[in-house]
Length: 113
Image (cartoon, rainbow, N blue to C red; front, side, top):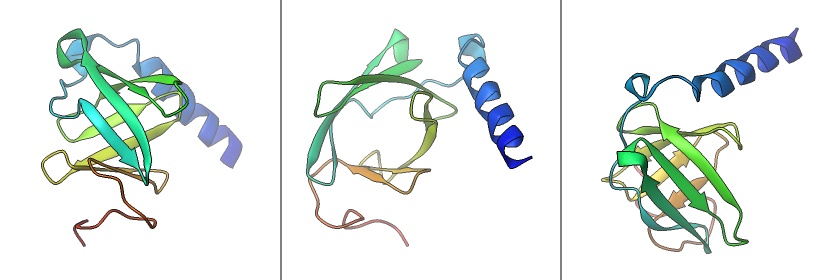
């Protein structure tokens, strides 16, 4: 049953990518360099802010959309991210973090409690 629920959830999220832009939100302020720990990533906003692409340290590209101004989604990774602190930290649903500056440890410094 858990597998079926997860499968249905993944299908619904995948289908959501085909919903017109009016059902999504524009995202701003996340373009540029990010770090997952000390690993550098690059984020580029395109399509008038309706979509963004992430290029990881290995050159792999993933694309995403924004649910609203503070929640983004990467369907290829099946994770959502909460944009924190004036777009300086993204807390992902898988428990990882991206920050504008490199950091050591599990969480970037200055993360709100």
